[in-house]
Length: 145
Image (cartoon, rainbow, N blue to C red; front, side, top):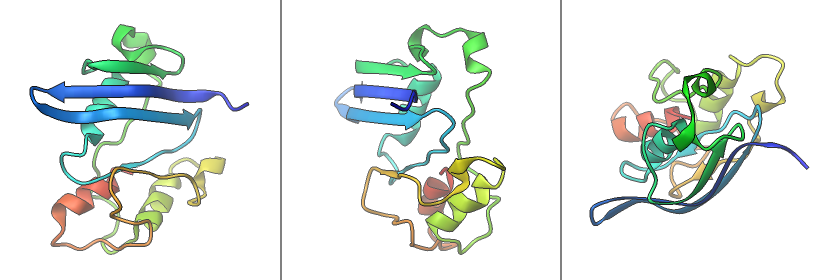
């Protein structure tokens, strides 16, 4: 059995009447490079902020490197890396090509293969779709992968 670096079950976060994250279940293997994709307002940033220990959750459980982020200290946060948005990838790449571009920063890892799993909050953008200079929100969304 593969040890999980991130394990989330039934994660929910609400802002008043707005449900930002609704019952998320997610498992990410240790050492895996993982992208969270979706449109504006889909709950990507909220999820990552919860997993980093910067935001509280309404319901569910979360563990990163075996620790509940809500109870973690500074030493725990040191080895946890997150790339929020990055506009440094060449324009016009597919989502898959962009992931491959950033995976090159992790040489020698099996995760550099772009046939890895995708967690997508919406059906777009697909791994084969290309960016457009006019699609600023979409570009910043999938480039966070």
